[in-house]
Image (cartoon, rainbow, N blue to C red):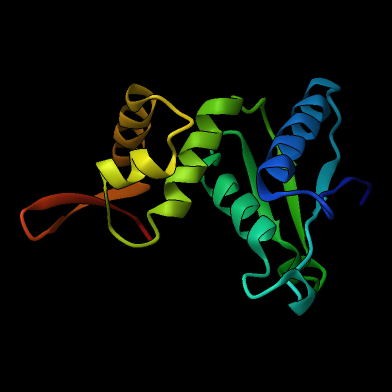
Length: 156
């Protein structure tokens, strides 16, 4: 099986996601039928205590983009947790999906809307509110009560 590749080693998490989206969209526009092999590393000890951040960010993003692509962990297809294989179907809308992926990653534990807004302050309050509503509507984020506050948590 022929496969195009993108290597995300040496980039920050945000850079890696932006590069992936750019390469992915160019790949789709070229009308290639090849899958895309995303090399992100598996999170070795040399990457610090929080190794695997790029892998987690990419895979969380891919989960939120299920209407545009299919994907499989590299460990399932080739025994390599440092890669993810992506099967493109259509162009990814960039900023909206990036915000959704950031919200999903941040809401691995219950978070209030104000905490989400503080964490993702590079986005407007309206963008965050709309992204949360969309994620809840898609069933990727659920509303949970924490005391008298409404929180949001990623569905597992």
